[in-house]
Image (tube, rainbow, N blue to C red; front, side, top):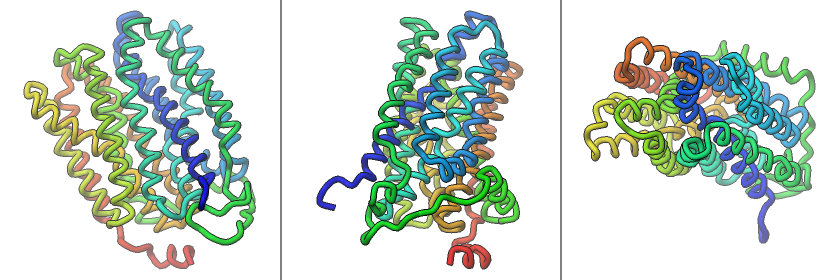
Length: 418
């Protein structure tokens, strides 16, 4: 403990990877208007490709956890970085929506599914015993803040040099992370003769999981579908995805432009949310180490519901709009640390990561469906007003689900944990 524990090096590399890969998820809001102008494609057609990306971003997660368990975090992350770089680098050549769907939706989506929020509990759970909640909050903040804080830079690059230059810049940054990951990422502390940060004594060897990783993944899903806690958490998180990445993440910039903002100003609004996002995620990690995670989730979802419902009416009031943006930013990914803790409490440290992977996958199903549905509804309704009102209403349902979660694991779960 007298020198820097290697856990902090791994956490730092993970933070860089999560923050930089967030540019891929930040780009849709910036890409949508120029693609419409250049090719004449509808918002619904473009949003379909972005929705596929978000969908795979979640669906790959639980399989990624099993693959990391079997073949290692470093090799899995390197392969995913290569996929994202390939998909992004080829996107400037597109001339049809199906090409956007294949490159941005499928290829980059497959890679992004590994470098997703499922990486957070894997790294925090393996490398940290002390300050696990704070580390979870910090990594979550890095991932989400990267998505939001990169928006002004991406918007400026797109307006100054064109959307193709912006996409190539994303590919270049991610390509630069490949050698960094190869040099400094490690799979487990035991791999280099250490215990996790906060534990004492000699390192204990951890044998790799036996069996097919995909069979383990589906087995965990089968267990979850028979578990009341899993179903409630998944129900809350599918709504969480719809009301964050789906509606707001994809459609906030077009909505701001609908009310007279420029593209750069709109991106600045989302970047401001990103600043508060960092604060909210770090604070949530600290609170999760100290308070009931169920109550935290209820509070976060109720706050989100109020902010979304008032958002369409706040554009004409600078003070009101600033308050809504601040609250939305604080709340954006604050749900992740308590959700990770609940999964660990109810399913154990190792199994909990896999269960969180499935819950995160369901979260991204909500994101993908909402991203696509938001574009279609905007085409048909001519306004984003009813979309945000509906998002606020369903956020209250998520609060109800979180409140119904039991405070302690059920009898079967307690036996498994023991």
